[in-house]
Image (cartoon, rainbow over all chains, first blue to last red; front, side):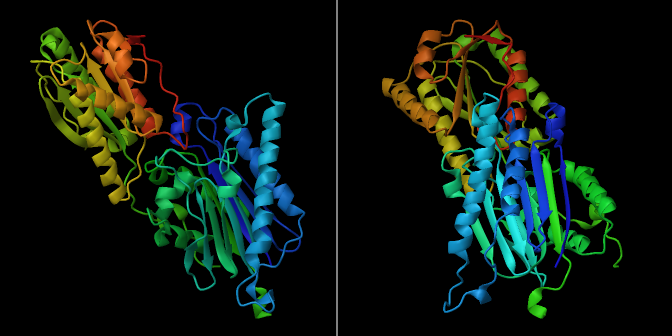
Length: 267
Length: 224
């Protein structure tokens, strides 16, 4: 089992205007046992060091998840139970990963003598195995998957306050308890994580339904035999194209993953 | 390998309404504003329209309404997006029904937010921008008292951000009692500079990322 992973973060035009750096960060790793790990963080525009906070959060979360022993993500393993036994095992594990990321960010802030809110960012974490997908999310942005039949599903929804520019951050009080945890015990053919800059292009709001015209070509793209450098450049070009920048001026991050090998239930 | 997909051509976007950034201009049109002040204010409104329309996102996202108060309160212009905003030409007469005006503005905002929610439109924290050269006058006392109570409650719960600007002989002390935010005094009749600032502020809000605090440009037109 293997995954093909592409990702890009690009600076929004409004950030360019104000000479702000891109405050999004992402990271992805494929473990030796075939688990895919992805993290996306969107630094708060108002927080002075949010780019550092976002980078620290994704790196700390991935480092933590890289060395864990994961419970199985498939339903079929749960004996004697009609209901899947995923939640009791995965939920604390994912919240612990969020806590680890938060601790790393708070420590970085303390080392710099700054308040943690200066390092505020959102955080989306995803773990995928051939058997299924687990996601944890604080703040906006979302994770979407396509199953083997080509059906799209939103794994998470953007967390928003009353106002369009309000969300929850990793460093916010109660953020980890309020994190959305989502588990899908079915194999993913395609996975997408994105920051809120793409939300209004990718999801049909307010329901948060994945927009087929947006995701189908992307998943078709990631499921081809790709030369990764060229494909990453194309993803970057897409995110900086006028078609996109006319619709959103925020920082944009999009990470795509496609499953390469047949899932083990075929074997 | 399948035919190469060009992402730029292939990907289609969901059609979602732009998030809206509502702003009410609550303007004193009492008799004392007659002459030069009202002319300068009218010119300022045109500046506001021109400035807002220079920003591609602000023109689609900022919604402006104009409410005037003198002996009566008039909704001169109900909410329109900046690209459809026609600067009204105001004239001055009568007394200063500021409390009634504030309540009307808060009512309009409540109604607008309800419309946004019903239509699945996201929005930013609304602004009321009050400009006056006096103090409440010619309306029942409870009109301003009720307005003050609502304003305090709405500000405390972040339902609105309400700014006040005093012009010429405005009773700044009284305005300081009425508005939870410290009112600013306009330098001379520099409405142009004020509306350039307001437009820049609305652009920042309407382009803002997930923040709870939007850093606003410092006002060069006012003093505390």
